[in-house]
Image 1 (cartoon, rainbow, N blue to C red):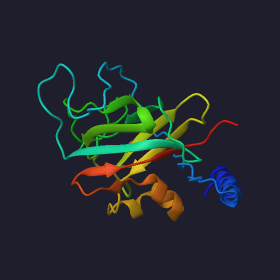
Image 2: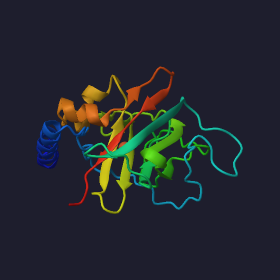
Image 3: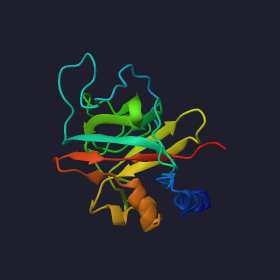
Length: 211
Ligand SMILES: [Fe+2]
């Protein structure tokens, strides 16, 4: 756990204990851990940044790969939901290739994959997007990045969060240098959960308030 998260965890614990004593229900939540931005934040302008990444406006055809549905809510560290949060997300296509001029891998570009979305949370902090399962990609001759989705989450009054979302039980997770650097608790907070529906994941995000 990072110092930042530990501090919030302890503060939440204290607030939770106090609330318990006076009979107030407080559902304290641990802040979603941070992760580095990586080299492929989109730099090529694109008009279509909606919540369906499996097709590109104006183009016939669908993105290749396994279509997945990801939904969740954004909370503060006291468990209150947050509306109108901006979630800026980007990921590799199903072949593990970014739509970025600096991605020199031999993996194919998928012209029908939107690759980048900017969405807002709705009432009660709900958000949802449809995408394809991101491919793993090579970091160097010895290492691969496990499948992940990059996110920048922001809202006035809260600390902006730069993170990466992982997929549960993926065999490459425990070989991924960034993932392995996190504690098991942090890994759990950064990993989406399966649902009863195939290819659907729940991923909740917790932001820290600016105090
Ligand atoms: Fe990445």
